[in-house]
Length: 249
Image (cartoon, rainbow, N blue to C red; front, side, top):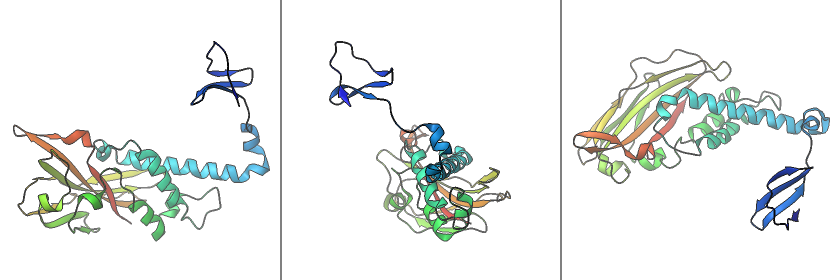
């Protein structure tokens, strides 16, 4: 690497040299690195190819899950959700103890308790984690998909953001086959309640469970609103909304 001393401030590649601006000014270095062809064909890079294949699979699996949950994620805002989910899917894939290296996959990883645990630890909004927002006990019935809370006191058992006057709680059940990308989702009824000291029983249940194959995900969503003149508006475009997988079958 060399420092460029010239009246011309160049950025880009020219004659095998790369010009760029760094913290120490304009710098230049020769183009280097290993060719794509060598990485794809040289036996010395077989581990690199295996790692790259599995990383690509983890990224694709994360995309499949996000797309299956598009309707729920539209107002759950986290700019780093995609890379965080890819990293989590990689942890799930690592629990595939059957497939050969380079072919380990998320579908097989989810057959293990540790694979399920890795994905259940994931909050789609890292700024609004379920464990930090919901401070009460809850129940979840995998036979019906019902999410329920008995005597929820919102202003004591919900860690709500400033400006919020109301919250909504709903459940969802998703069937997703990562091998075929066949998916089906059922959304439970939305329970909307004011944030005050009145105890409220919460029950959200889908009218019918999805029947598609693959893994079964049970989710809960909490959204916050501000009421103005009897109209509830989403608070800060969903920056404080929660979406969490609470069980996987």
